[in-house]
Length: 227
Image (cartoon, rainbow, N blue to C red; front, side):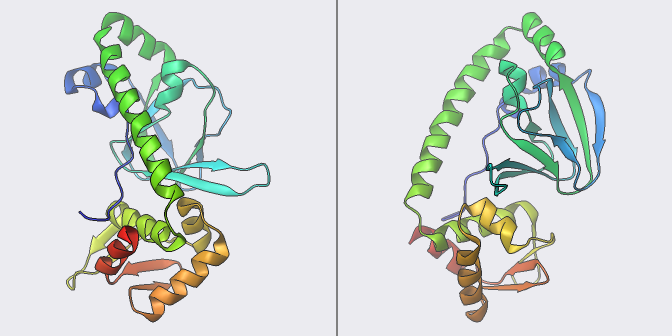
C-alpha cells in the first residue's frame, strides 16, 4: 500500500522450502521470557534462530547508552543469520518483546548442511546482494525524510506487525510502546517525537494512552510518509 514501509529483508527464509526444511530438521528448541536477551552485540556468532512464536526486537546501542531499534521480528523470521554465514560476532542485540519459542541451528550444523547441499550458497549470494540494495535504498530514503515522515513510517510498520483492525477501520496496536521506543525505531530525538505525537493526537490522527496507540487515520500517516 502507498506509504507503507517495506518488510525487513530476511536471508534464510528465502531459501526454497525443501532446503529450509533440511536446515531446520535437527534444530534445537529454545525459549525466552519477555525482556530476556537472546544474544548481545559482540557475542560469538554460534548459530541462528528461527522465531516460532512471540516477538523479538533487534537493537544497537551507542557508547552513551542510546538505543536504536532496527527491526521487530515476528514468527517465521530468522535472527542471527549473518553470523551463522560468516562466523563473525553478532552485529546487533536481539531481545524478546513477548515470550518466544525458537528453533536454534548451530554454526556447525549449518556448515554440514551446506557441505551436503552446496546449492544453498547460490541462493545466499543472490539474497545478500538484494539485501544490500534494500539497505542502500532505505538509507537514502531515511536521509531525506522529515521527522514527521519517519515517525509516520514507523507507526505504519508497527501497525502492520502488531496491530489489529477494529470495527471502525482503526488499527489498534496491542503492545505497550513508549515514546523512547518510537524515537529509537525512527532514529529521531525524543523531544521531536513528543511534539509530533501531540499534534497528531490533537488532530485525532492517533490516540495514545498509557503507552498504547491506536492509528485512527492511517490515510494521514501515509500522506505524511509521501510528503
